[in-house]
Image (cartoon, rainbow, N blue to C red; front, side, top):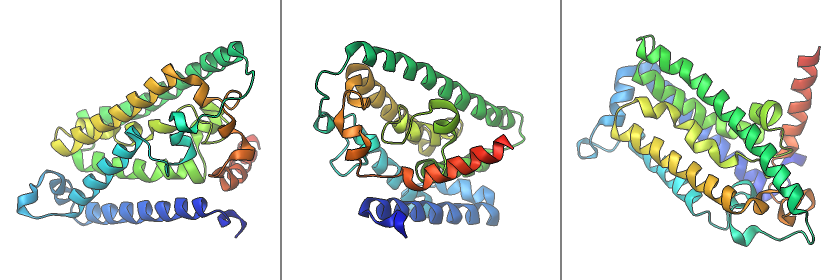
Length: 250
């Protein structure tokens, strides 16, 4: 298929397949015995290494890569590094300031929308409608949705941020904070470590954005221009987005 010509796209879909497989396993564990499913997260390792211990290690490992992005990280996440900044000669500082102000406004809207969505689940949790097993299952669904947003369709990009692609996305590295938002309510080592590690990732991202916004704008960073893109995650998503918007307009 033409969408898989670049090796990076192949890697993205291998990662997507892994996430899908992991979520299907977690869904199976939940449906088989939801209480035991949650118990796996609070079972000491000395009593037996289980699937959720493995997922915790994977989650923490992935987030540690985003705190200090290696060279092989995606362009969307790696643009905060100095090594990925190639200045556009004579770019306008005033236009950069306008870009920052506009992107910050949209980012706050996206954050409020996310917190609003998750406040619904928080209310359901505190009123006893759902429990910790459901929060864990919700976290796993968010884990998969993170890559759905990158590869297939992103409601934040389409309706909120309106950035042209993931490479240029203002909130690209908010994903881990978002996917582990339900973990805050789990009141366990598993939940709190994932949530606060996700918080550390988003804080690192926001610090880089605040100190070096020129690295995040294609008007000041040549690396972010379409001609220099190596990820090409927009290939399938652009088509899907057009189709979905067309359906909504009918």
